[in-house]
Length: 115
Length: 111
Image 1 (cartoon, rainbow over the protein chains, first blue to last red):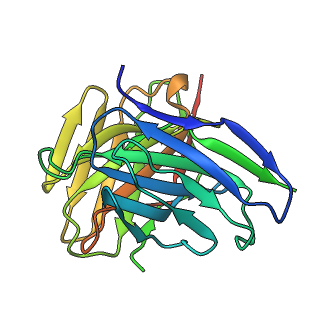
Image 2: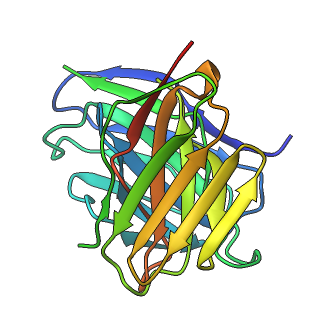
């Protein structure tokens, strides 16, 4: 079955450590996205990528980094510079070639807790 | 920064009633709009997309769009307890290929 896999589901880290969240998709989608969700809040865009080897900052990119070396993979690194990293992180993809503006398809998310 | 506004709720309706969820957006050039449902602790799942003014129906769900008023809504007919969730409105940004989300409206359907 096609889908988006995020791992791990839960992640615990000590303050000051960098951590990388994995996102893999086998939907053959060109575009991939990272969003962050805080309790009781909507989704905020961190980074997005329309094509391999290219990515753009979203609304809250500070303290995060990404890479897009393969079409199916878009890992997110939460660096020690991110002041409040504890959150629910969602990876998504879409097919820009679809009819109209195609919707986002989401992975199951990674819940990161930093203490 | 472009904004999408939703009433946070909770919106409480009895089972079998119509639930009406509303959303306004600031980007006048936006052309594509989406409603997602999110259960607690889970990722969002797409309910409906709408691109043209007017109504779009899919089963018990109807999305309504008024671009002149920058307003989009979701009606849920015959509400069921299983519809209890947070409903997120999302708008496709002009100028970048990404969605901006509202903060969501929490719906509670009382049995």
